Length: 264
View 1: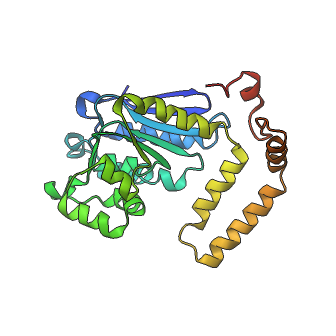
View 2: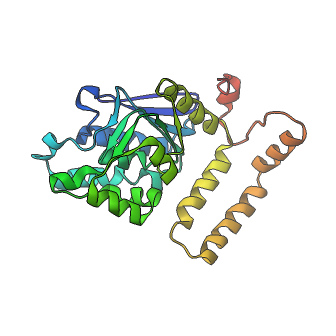
View 3: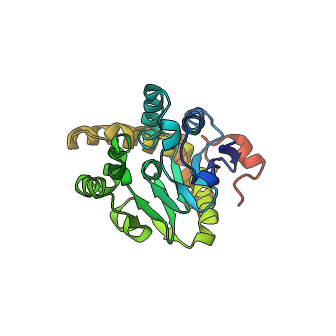
């Protein structure tokens, strides 16, 4: 299978598994990722989504051989959903870019709310070199890099390294290739063990406040803040802080604590 999924420690791990083709995205791979992310939204046992890849390349972008003869309307709909998961998912997404990411690969990286990149990883939007434009990844990449830089990179097709990606905001942190898998899993598990109610409230705020005016965003923040402050979740968090112990979040499935799933 070209997309593998596992669930452990409240982390849904999605792995691109087509290293012999530089993990180029086929329609089936895109649909599989979309299905997994969509299902995770309703799964109380998923607290975080981790996306990584097998092999030295994270993702070489769209599979051009397949794209030449496929139903373009269906492919476009699938890509539109994939390159919007960062904006629509209420479950945090961690991306581990273990190597080169080009075109749609950069679009996939841009879906991460936390992104780790391996030293030596190369990024780029080379579509212009084949007479194309990164239409569907443009919004999310622009949100990460800014409109002027995204336009420059789209016009030039110029590659950039992991350190630049980090300085520009596409990547959260850069780490040695041998450590990226462990660091990404640790980051995802740390997120997944925190308060599900607080994360849901925060992710709702980020999504609902996007594009709103200062006053509108403030109103949304005030409403969600008041709701959370009045909850048993916040009460437990404050009490645990005062008692110098780990909280037992009321919104966390009971099995998490019964099975000791919060242990690394």
